[in-house]
Image (cartoon, rainbow, N blue to C red; front, side):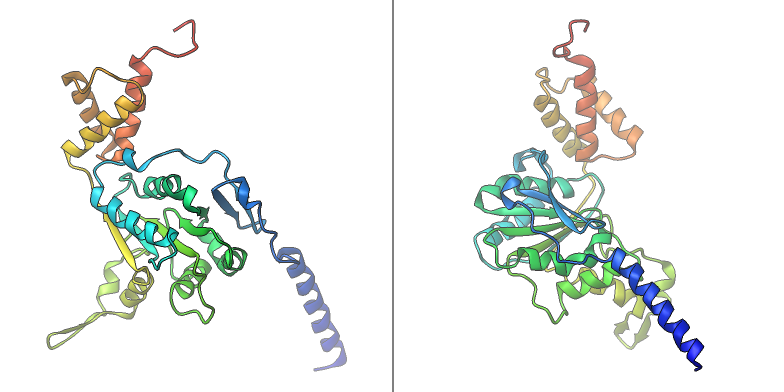
Length: 295
């Protein structure tokens, strides 16, 4: 390498470092005002925690048709807030059946006992070590909440989460759990080709490496909770609950029942979310409007 080539290399390295300095934070992120809220959101671009002032006020009693799922995650969370051992949780299955609402309801139930929730998207998971350092040693108990999580194997957050759950040399904080919701059981897309390399040797099945890789992340969650589409009766029961919640006192008449079922058919789904949306629409049309003289 000539002197000119070496000087050019040094110049390019200096330019690269200058660009990195603009991207990477110069100091560790400042801790938020933990007393400002019970819920926080991680901003990946700014690398900071922001309090969520108007957190959704949904209670566990509002979540119907998922009693078994509710009992299992409630027990795990209660162990955690009381200072005991508990598992990271993966909530997976049918859309609109209460996975995200259940996490929000847990915060409303146990915030007085010191529970806090930090919402993070999958891009922000590469900052997980920073978040762990911010909460480590605090008296509060933190749930890192990842909503609608799914990955491709080459995404940075995938490997970070996988290592943090089980396998990283750095110990996970005792006051932090990860609760993730996903429509996919294994958090990654499944392809027919993944199974073609599966081998059968006698009575033993040896899954392909791609299959093993997909299972390896989800199995690191200690507690799997599955959610299923509602039956017609469950759907109608949830709709009746939200109708009453929004002020409808006439009950589930034949007209309401028929319209409710038509609503689910038009949406192609029977779920708690769809039932709640129907209740809002029906009550908005049929109940007197408040503070509106022209209604």
